[in-house]
Length: 231
Image (cartoon, rainbow, N blue to C red; front, side, top):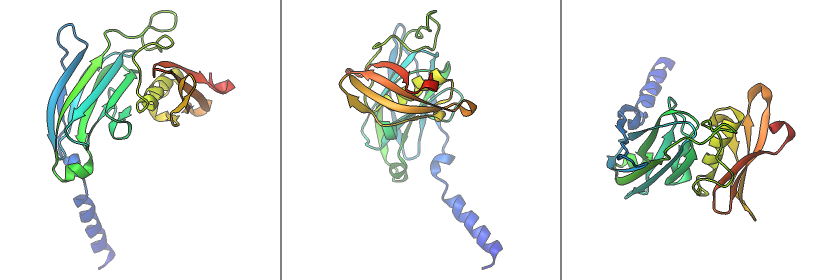
């Protein structure tokens, strides 16, 4: 077989290896909150490579909570910020609940899907997805503006599995970079609660090291610089 035939055969094999999810349209459904309510639960079913994006409108500084109850151990959800394909929460890594302060205003997408091995087998998942968004954005530093961290030890407790994602969101806002440029370590328990050490890549301004702190109940305290130029 000459190189031309080898190249064609390789291309055909690569095309056959493309997962079906790439060819399956993602279903979009906007989450509607009942009048006067800040949360809603939707029930759905997915099979194989089917994927559903639940669209949730929210503003910077608001807090969002998402939880998934499902019949399948292979069903998860991701949270994607407005106008981005980069998830700020990956359920297959962090579990079935997300709690976080939102950095951007716009339509967030909660993407429900099956893991590839289960999708390949054509498995089905029945689920209840609960989404909650607080009624108003958090206040800014000294002026009540949106998008700033809340008061010390305020807000709902964050589970240990969600702490790294929550920490990345808070740090990305404090250092003015996208979550992709935030790196976090593991959750470490101490006498007062839990801490996560991380770093923010600010490009020409260098790498800034920080520590996210949570109290004994899992409530977020602050992002604390742990070197002089990390402020």
